[in-house]
Amino acid sequence: MRPLLLRAGELTPIEKAERRVLVLANPGHGLDKMQASAAIYLGMQLLLPGEWAPSHRHTPNAVRMIVEGDGAYTTVDGEKLPMQRGDLILTPTGLWHEHGHDGNAPVVWLDVLDLPLVHYLEASYHVDGPRQQVRPGHGDAVYARGGVLPTPMGERSNKAYPLLRYPWGQARAALQALAADQPDLQAVQVRYVNPETGADAQNILGYSALMLRPGQTLTLPVRSPAMVFHLIEGAARVQVDDQGFALAEADTCCAPGYTPVTLTNRSTDLPAFLFIADEAPLHRKLGVFEIRG
Ligand code: 1HN
Image (cartoon, rainbow, N blue to C red; front, side):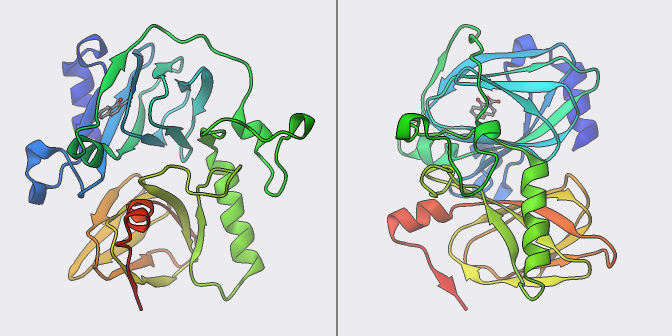
């Protein structure tokens, strides 16, 4: 996809596009539907040095998983969030967001939205706005330590989304600590949560990071939600029923619900790190979540 995305960068000025994205559309749903699964939209977005993608807000929730590049940032609800490889950045429903780039090489990220569901509900709308005022303060600084929360004057945060940026260094360190602490643990996985409530970071789609130990093969329980796998680091194989995908860094693949999935680390020396998005929060809320075996 990378050469196609860079070609899109040559062909389409950002002023024309607002967001420059190649959509990872599932042909099984019809390419024009722009969906990866029933509830998941996926796209690869490119921002070139000096470009600015103007402020807007919309009802679908978005997250960005940063794939490559340095010097870009996204401002969400007045918080300026640096974008570095492997970071997960939330753009929850209704919050203003815009992207800028002060670096000198292309920046690419994976957008994951619950757009297909919100569109189906006839609840998807979009509002343009002026450039945001950046406010001081960083959620990823004050929520950087598990087990303790910022509590000025004994009050909890009144924000629905207190943490917007999950730096990759911290998630990676958490996975390595978990793997070292529990040598027999098969699924070395951490979930991205709202640190004030412990609930999933967003209401509709769920996000997690998973580490495969060198040479490890991990068979996932068969579950009802569809899943997206994006390889942050290493080399992996994703076996979905009878189809296998060899993932290199920055590759993405999907699995439908109710389907057996086996993950393999293709390296016997180094760990592999995957970002996973799924529809589990939605299935749980609707009472249709299933797990088999
Ligand atoms: C959107 O607002 C962004 O803000 C990216 O970067 C992709 C796809 C559909 C609807 C809104 C962005 C989007 C989007």
